[in-house]
Each structure stands twice: as C-alpha cells, then as structure tokens.
Image (cartoon, rainbow, N blue to C red; front, side, top):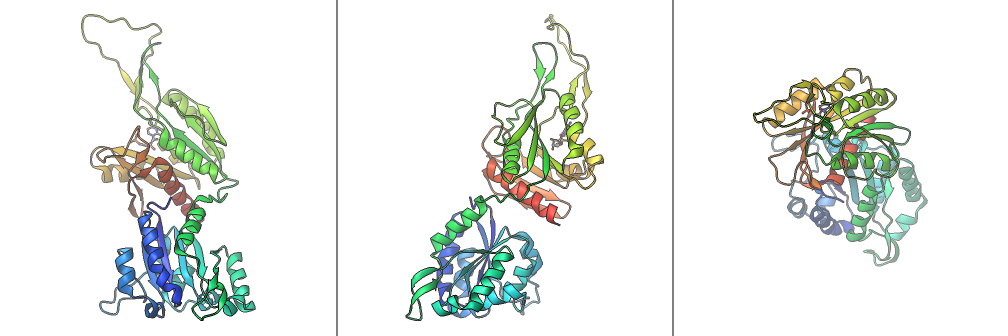
Length: 398
Ligand code: C5P
C-alpha cells in the first residue's frame, strides 16, 4: 500500500518527537520514500542525525543551507509529496497552520502542499482540551486536514488524559487507510480507457495480434471508477472480467477501436491509452481460409490509424495519457511520442527490466511529462494505476 509513496514527515517541538524515529522506520520499511522536515525546536527533542539516518535523506529545517546557500524549495517538496504527515503536531504548529502563519520551512511547505495532509497532535491534556486548540483543529478539518486522534494515558507532564500522540503503528495504519480511502475525487468526470490487444484478421481463421494481457489498462479503469469517475473501457482481446462500475465496449480490430474511441472521446474529460494497437493490418482480408502452397508467402499490410495521435489533435482541455513500451532508446522515443501524440504524460515501460511488461501482474514504469521523469520502483499493476491516476488528479487541479 505504501510502496513508492512519497511522504514528507514533519516533526515539531514535542517530547513525542522521540516516537517519530519509529514512525519513520515503519514508513520506510513499508516501502515509502520519506523526507523529514523539522522545526528548529524539534531538533532539541530528536537529533537530525537520527532522522537523516532513518529516512536515508538529509533532514530539512531551514529555507537554505547556510554553508553553501542551497535553497530548500518548499514548493518542489510540496509537489513531490503524496502525503504530508506532521507527527507530532504541537498546539502551536496547528494554530499556525489554521491561520496561515508561515514562519518556518515546515509551515511554508504546508501552505504550498497540493497533497493530502495529516496531523498527529501531541500535547498536554489541558492544552488539547482548550477551546483555542479545539477551534484550530476544527478549522484544519474544514481545510481538509486529516486529524489522527491522540490517545489517552500517561503524559510527559505526569498527568493522565487525552493528548499523547497516537502510537507509530497506529499512525501507519491511519496513513494506509488514507491512501486506500480512494475518495470519490473524480466524481462527475468521465474517462475513456483503451486496453488489451487488437486482432487483425488475415482470413476467417488466422489473425495478427500481440502479447498484451490488458491487465494494466483494466487496473487503470478500475482505479478511475473507484474514485467515482464514469469509465468507458474500449477493450481489445483479453481474458479479464470487466471491473466493477466500468462500461465496457468490446472491439476486435484497430479500425473498430479507432471508430469507438473517436465516437466516445469528445464527450469525456480525457483518455488513458493503454491498448496495444496493431500498427499494420492486412490490406485485404481473405474471404476463405488461405491455402498453403509449396513456396513462401507474404501478406501485404497497410497502416492503421494512430488512435492516440488522432485524439491528441483535437483534445482541447481533455487529459490524454499514453503508454510507451520500448526496447531501445527508451527516453528519446517516449519523449518523441509525448510530443507527437500530444500526451499530457506518458508511462514508459522498458521491456529490458525484469518484472515489467506484458503478461505479469507487476510493472516497472517511469512517468514522463514536459517537466521531467519520475521513476517508480517495481510494483503491482494496481499500484502503478494508483500512481497514474494520482498524477492525473494533480494535473486536473493545476
Ligand atoms: O507509437 P506507439 O504504438 O509506441 O505508441 C504507444 C501509445 O499510443 C500507447 O498509448 C497506445 O495505446 C497508443 N496507440 C494508439 N493507436 C495506435 C498505436 C498506438 O492509440 N495505432
């Protein structure tokens, strides 16, 4: 669930910061990539060295590195993250978040983050119960921040009550639940997804096709539907069942897929082109089964329509996502396709990597857009679909 997720762990000045070390460890072990931001006071409670070692990255406190002037861009960090988790979150930091104060890197990053934000409050029971804190927490809730409720029990002040930060394992569970919640964030939108292999008939018995299983496209369709979108899946040949809540249109040839897509696309908010479409089809389809002779034979082929490029020409404000499966010059070829077909981004899978490609349940992909390239680790096709749809959502919100 957390594999490949980008999480910023924000640590503020509370004694509960000692639990952030375990929390960081658990997130990293679950496969997340973690970058740590600390407030200046947090450094008094837990050392940057501890957090840098556990997160495998230098920790960030200041806006720039005083040694060499290197800028710690809160905007870039906010864009990088899938989740900003502030644990522990003090009453002071939550008050500043609620009112938009931005006097340290942790807070400026909060204001520029486009991702989900969660806080795990930690403080003494009276501070927690105070109407000011409760008011600020309610404001944060209204702003869409997820509050991971503190527990009750022994507090550092010696008192007993509610205010101790949730245990690291419980915070991880809350984070996982957040990622799997799949808010109906795409409700009211409609997407076209193409998937599977096309079948180009040679005669009534034989055809030209390819190894595509359709699994990647079906996973994308399923993920879009889970987030509330209406999904029309134009599917070539596969052996998969139609995902729940998805409308499937079955096609055979590239020409059938082309016609269906041209009809459906104008009424949608975009398309994800996962199908492995034949680039060539027999010039004529023999009416009878071709008989073998003694010599060799050849079949004349003609070009099919490039469906993605056709949709790309008139896409307007619609989002268009493509795939590239390459065996050589992958970056150059993918960038060329991105431009030629007018994709917003392209998902590159290299057949040279183990665990990537056609029939398996896993994939290793890179997401490439005009700005650059993001390499994702080996993960299930379902998880790749989550990353693809997350990126689509980010682009929709721009
Ligand atoms: O040019 P190439 O086939 O490598 O491009 C791959 C991308 O274009 C994929 O997204 C694929 O679904 C789409 N495509 C298409 N129609 C074609 C060929 C490819 O939509 N005829």
